[in-house]
Image (cartoon, rainbow, N blue to C red; front, side):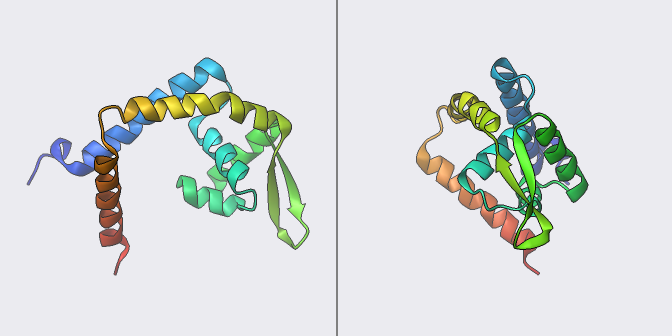
Amino acid sequence: MTMPLKTVFYNIERAIKEYRKFSQRNLNKVQKEITVDQALILNVLNDQPERSQKELADLLYKDNAAMTRMVEGMVRKGLLTKDEDPSDRRKARLTVTSKGDAVLKSITPVILNNREVALKGITDEEIGLLVQLLQKIVRNIIQP
């Protein structure tokens, strides 16, 4: 059996964790009170305002309780508003506030730079191949 530290899965996990730490350090230089996950929420809701809290949880691989805590924290910070959805009272509608929009605008260059640094020396073709391979791994796992 291959030593776990030499498997592709270990290396994927390490790359993700190192990238998140790198990203958080750089976000902290611009906005001390926002996390990588909160930045992702602002980004998704800015592009797709109809996304539900449940959909955000699925996108960020968070359980419902963790997502609720995260959203409540963002509401307290004034980054989001949470209102009852008029078409379905069981759902809440999340909206990026003007403060949230300003934070997103201030961190967007940081996010773009983080990606550029992380992908330095990797061609578009290599990125495309990596995405295809990762998608194939996911399909292998989720298919019965």
